[in-house]
Structure formats: C-alpha cells, structure tokens
Image (cartoon, rainbow, N blue to C red; front, side):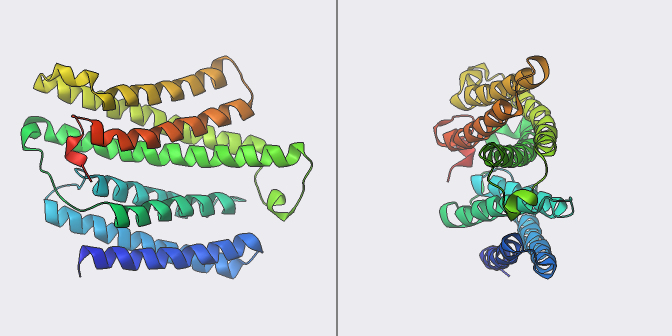
Length: 274
C-alpha cells in the first residue's frame, strides 16, 4: 500500500472521528464520544504506519523534510488528544487538539512532498540533528497543548466576565484547572525546546560552522524561547494574572508557527524544503 493511500485513508477516518466528537460536544452523547475516540485511535494507527513506512524508505527516523516533521507533530497531537479524552471535563480540549491535528495532517498532504535529503554535508552530526528535530516535534506538541488550554482559559474568562452561562460553560474545567493544564504543558515543552536548540548549536559548533549561529532560524528560535521564558517570569516571579499569561502562551505558539515557515530562508534548515 502506497504512503499516499495510507495517508488519505487516515485523513478520512480522522474526519469521521471529528464528526462524532463534534456531535458529543454539541449535545452530550457518550456513544458518539466512544465512537469518535475509537476512530481517532484508528487514525493514529494509520499515522503510525505512515511514519514506519517513511522509516523503511529513509532507513532512519524520518525527520529531514518538512513533510516528515509535520507528520511526527500531527501524530503527537493525535496521541495527546486521545489521552486527554480520558480527562474529566476535557471534551472540548480533545476536540480542539483533534482539529489542530487534522488541519496539520491535511495541509501536510496538500502542500508538502515526501522528498528525502540525507544531509551528506552533516554526516558527522547527523545523529544529533535527528535527536534535535525529534525533540522539536515533541516540544511543538506540548506547546500546542498549552496554547489550547490557554485559549480555553481566555474563552471561559470572557464568558464568566459577561455572565454568559450555557451548557458549554458548564462542561469546561474551572479557570484554575485550565491555567494549571496550560502551565504544565508549557513546563514540558519549554525545557524540551531549550534542549533541542542546544543540540542544534552543539552540532554547529562540532562542525565548526560558527557563522550558522547567526542564521535566521537560530535567532528566531531564540526569540521564541525568550517569549516562553517571559511567560514563566510573569507567572512565577511577577505573579501576573492567568489572563495575561494565557495571552503570552498564545503569542508563543503563534511565533513558533511563524518560525516553522522561516525554514525556507534558513541556510541551516535548507534541507527541509517543500
């Protein structure tokens, strides 16, 4: 079975899963939730098969193209969405993460290719780069989860402020819980981002390519890291409100997404072209 066919079947199952999730969120329907979760598990299995097929094609963990990177990220988001399904009163978080995973999967299929660049010029540190990119995908997944809960925090805060009560509000966790979930996700994602950036810098130093430390991608990732450091400073040291820190969580993810599109102008990431 071809990779494209596996990917397309997975997308179709993913779409069906979203329909059942939406049905459950619109009006409580435990049967729809169970079916949606089951279909999401099947979609995750198809994503896993796609990853394994790329492993067979490339002979290693497939991380050297934008397609492979987004495939790993969407797989991570899908697995996280499945896990969150079992968290009490987190149905909408699971739905939002599933929507994110589905959109990334579809855009990846439509816009990118599965080309492979073995990075011959980076052979001595290829293992470090594989680890660096794998950590980057884990970090992006965790930061996305943090941003989803931060967005839910802002939504719930707005509704409570204007005293707009409905069934959706009653099914959401409290502001304190949403803030806690967002913080914990960012507490995982940010150190992993630091480690990923550190490995990238170490690989550059090992190869003696010091000029790449001034590369646009390295600088922009450092700025993104600075945004998350600012988040923790405001949260832990300055004791700012959850409302303010939630906004910074969303700003951080927006910059991370923008950072991904800078690959096309990066010498260090020229391997990841579309």
